[in-house]
Length: 82
Image 1: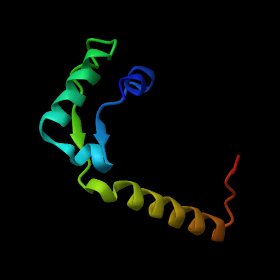
Image 2: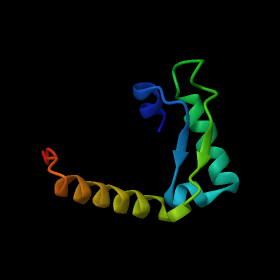
Image 3: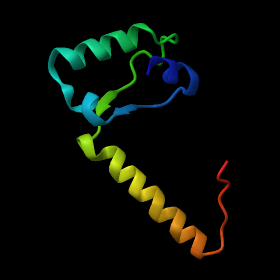
């Protein structure tokens, strides 16, 4: 996760799935270790929060993408599938 922060410089990191729901010592260890591996002092304090959808975050995101692509295909837009 720290690698992605270093690469993309996001404003916030939202963690879904089992890791986002872990809480306790596991979450604290993840957050501490992640911050230790972020290069920029400015990015080291970014908010790291669990996804509000919990373990369903990936499923909801995949469904939203499928619906969007289907709607766009019907409207005549093409997606690059490569």
